[in-house]
Image 1: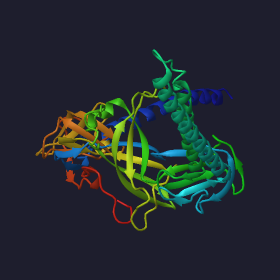
Image 2: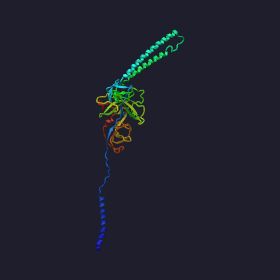
Image 3: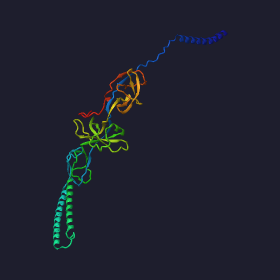
Image 4: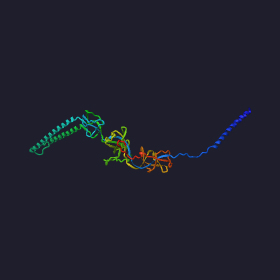
Length: 410
């Protein structure tokens, strides 16, 4: 029994010692037989980039704006005399066309014809009275020469009576002029060729002077107010004072608008600027006009009032401008260039103007520079790259306005 207890105590001591020795042996074997490690830097490769060759251009710095088409001339049809409408122009309805001089409306003229007849009667009576007073004045002069002594009074020579008769004749003649004028106002003639926007009258209606019966506008010229920031006028050949250049038209404008599911374009010119800045926005409005907006080419709709249009105003020419894609310039106004050895360089540029689809740079680039247009995660000055020259695309080659074609599209 004692021997068994002694053997169990020895096992408790020997087994932990054997485990420790086995662990040391395994660790030594791993350390001796481990593979050798080679110190190597990871190979990240040479990044591939797309580049374009920069070319200075002479471009026109066009200005974009927008506005609503309005007629240059728009008036209300308002009668100057009272009466019943007895005649209306066949086209006197919303959307109807008329020519200059057309009788759009006629008021019953019988009362005014009667006034003319009465004026004739008053003139005849006044002429008779003048003739009688002239005869009596002549008789009084002769009698005074025969019987009178000294200087006769004006009343004796019937001068006041004659002056009164002549004044009444002039008044009767003035009444005739007024009666004829009122008779002429029974016919309302159009002062221009135009179109009816809306009307509020009908045949047989009795109207009063000053009552608005219809709204008319001329179709010879359409105008568009174009809001512009004051700094944009630096790019336009547009005079703010036209007093000495009344006959000179301003820059060309191409207008574009959506109609019947298609985009159409019209050409016009800026004719003037308004006299004051908008107090709320601080913008100055330029006024563009399109002549004969209803005489358009086949397949193109007229430039009707109320149509919302976008406008591109022809700007001044600027030489030695580099046209760059938007992604080629970072927020710090820097670009990436690749030299002849395919080394990357970071260079600052002077931005002339930013547009939605391009950036115009003036300084910082040279003709023939290879500009990076693709993305590089971490650009480093002097890093090696693999460059591929690509076509810059038509947007970077656009230099000015394009005129509308036959079907109204650019």
